[in-house]
Image (cartoon, rainbow, N blue to C red; front, side, top):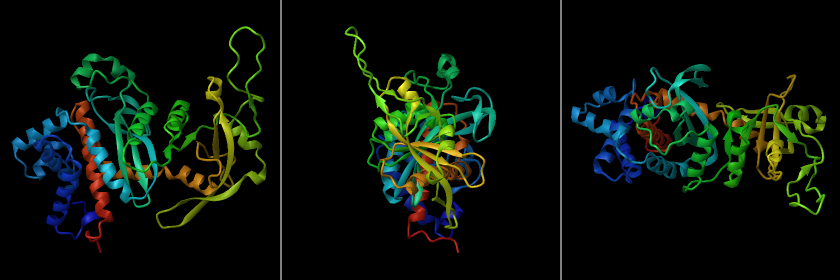
Length: 408
């Protein structure tokens, strides 16, 4: 088992708990062999180090060639819905970790060749450059006592979606169409919002926050959000008044769209005009050693200009600006739809909480083999991520389990 989690615990006890957990969350799988294969695969992800691709994993588990064939079919071709397993994990684990936020992000998975679904030369934050890779969008539940992935969707570039021969070979369903990464993230969040888990603020980086449709979609779901945006984001400041113009003639439809009484300005320009008293030092995060860290922030009520220009009603949001002491310019900006009376420290802490997703990705890849799936099946990729979620969920519960002794 993972040494950092269960060192010193008799293997039999942990395997018994693992079997019980997988039996619980995989109980919705219709066929007994599916439930058995789910347990074998999750055992392989949890129990052994090294490469987590299927053949060496089952070899380490001393499984038979027949089991290998069965698990391979279970991953690549079996029609079970991966969200069934992810939802069961979420509804079992999220109440245990005291949810604070959901975090939206994406990660690159380095791949050779061109036949794995979605693979191409594209930018990956994991690589920090353009490289041959897949990119998967994910949503993670972040709590005071742990984390858990609660949704996965493989990003398919437009050229992949248009190439029906490659789609057929990768077993991509005909119903799957091109969607942007913010569009995929919104689908995942909408799905999770229907589960029996706490609805908490959604956090996102600039790649998602700059998409006004993504923010509007979250607001339409009645979900709060804190989303990073760029310095050039155009906003109307707090003094702006919006008025529907009077009808200019008796002909035609009367105006219905409110107009601003002044021009919009960039978030950077607004920050530079704020008075000194608008800025205050606020606790924004606690580091792993328990030290509370502060930074200098301003919190301003604004209306994003782009939706108004698209003839949508003005919607007031928080513009959160971080301008650390000694810096020549603000370092970060966020838009948030939390209530007007939200305490500044809560806004700042939510804005700075998104970094925890990097720890999740580190464990999912470094310990649980998220990036080790070698199949070329679209379903197989999503089955793999669901089973990785199951392994992650079990280890999260193990860390909280009083029966699991910790290393000395």
